[in-house]
Image (cartoon, rainbow, N blue to C red; front, side, top):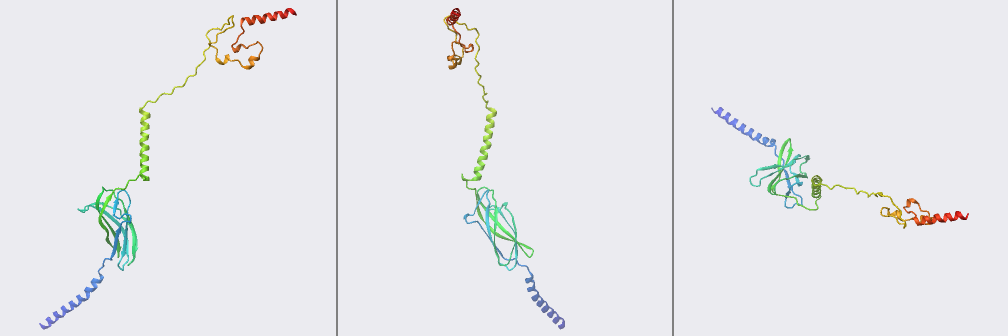
Length: 261
């Protein structure tokens, strides 16, 4: 009995000694998460942390590897959720980096996202995923309430001016097309040239040397200077004819000349 008791006591001491020697080894082999600090901040011009709809919202992530192990920065992602209930509204852009950060090193990386929500307060959550010893870890970079706002309108906004010009040109074309389609256009009339009518009757010379001038064009009534210098003979095309008295006087002078010969 004494031998068996002594043997049992000896076994208990051996087991305790083995447990004391094995437990520290187990704690040393357990993998600990590397300490990585991440802080996300808005740019200096955005002091109030507003998220503008339709524009690229930028964040700057300051990362510090406080452990002695090298880590790899894999991705940065974010989400917008309800400020009170925490219900997820939308997952934001996921950006991939794949940057290796040594132990004790610091690094700053950018992150940007877009928002299309009604103006109001929402909770913005941004996190970093890194890996060490083939194990992935997630570190929160930003978790706070932000205000969603609309972009400021300006009359000098180039994009807005281009949009207005395109819309104005489109509606102007529609109005012009409707005007040509539904409004009757006046017909163009060509001016007819006035034709000079020929005389319907014959012109007869009177004994007093008069003649009818109603049908004779005005430019025919004006004698050219060369015609005025001609002696007694007038062209028939000019429209002027000798009177009866002049004709008889000329004939009598011709006869007297013949008689003298």
